[in-house]
Amino acid sequence: MEFAEKVFFKYLKERGFYNTAQRRLVVQEFLRLEGHVCADELYRAVKKKHPRVGQTTVFRTVKLLKEAKLAAEVNFTGKRRRFEHEWGHRHHDHLICVGCGRTIEFANKQIEKIQQQVTGSMNFQPLHHRLEIFGHCLKCRKEKGE
Amino acid sequence: MEFAEKVFFKYLKERGFYNTAQRRLVVQEFLRLEGHVCADELYRAVKKKHPRVGQTTVFRTVKLLKEAKLAAEVNFTGKRRRFEHEWGHRHHDHLICVGCGRTIEFANKQIEKIQQQVTGSMNFQPLHHRLEIFGHCLKCRKEKGE
DNA sequence: TTTGAATATGAAAATGATTGTCATTTCCAT
DNA sequence: ATGGAAATGACAATCATTTTCATATTCAAA
Image 1: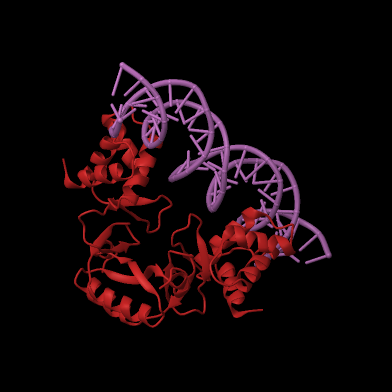
Image 2: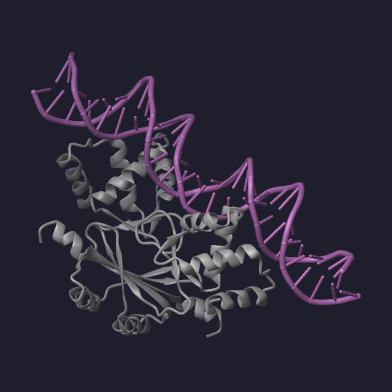
């Protein structure tokens, strides 16, 4: 059992929510999957092993995972909301290739500085940020003969 | 007639699209509205003055406005896509208050620097970026007794 | 171990933002 | 004025997500 699972169970207990078998299956599968996963993909992965779990339950559990800060929502251009692991992960931002859609994660401390500059002069208290840089990845550039 | 309208008409003509009365009404209303507008809000504004214009047409025209770079899509937390004026506006980013939802625009050149740093080391060619800083605005902080 | 209040489930229905369809209209170059 | 092609609008369709509700499950207390 991963520590993140324990965090989830603790979250449930503290709020008087049940620790159901379905929720355990969903959180396990979510933590097993990599990258950015939409709810439907998660549902299909869960259903493959546990056909009795309903789609609605997966959607509901994803919502809980998000509230418990285990999952963070990312949504670059697609219509579907996508989620990535949040608990135990340092904050990072994304490079998004507009050609093939792949994403590259990066971390840069300078942004926090800018954040302080910008928000300080506006009496705005920052909580978190999101930086997305759109462009062309190496692979797409090579395919275009660059 | 605003210059942005002319840009739109030129865009239509260059691509062999018609310059219809409906499209003229929609672009005028779009340019008249301020801030971040969702397609439905635009439709309702247009319909108020010109009840014969259909909702589908508004959606389609918004799509064209976006392609013509008159409208830029912004979408912070809501489910609906929202649009803001793009043509004739310098690039800017957003502070978003998680308390009341208001947004504050800001421009900061340092981000381009970070962009170059990050993408340079990854062989990624940047096209554009989006920085969203979430936090609490002055008003919400005052209401919370800060 | 049993009980029962409250939460959770899942299948089906509903929602709603957006897009597709198609008969008809309109645009605009000739 | 003509006609080919784009556009319209009402309605239908789509699809990711949420709601409904009868039933199941959890878990703390007895």
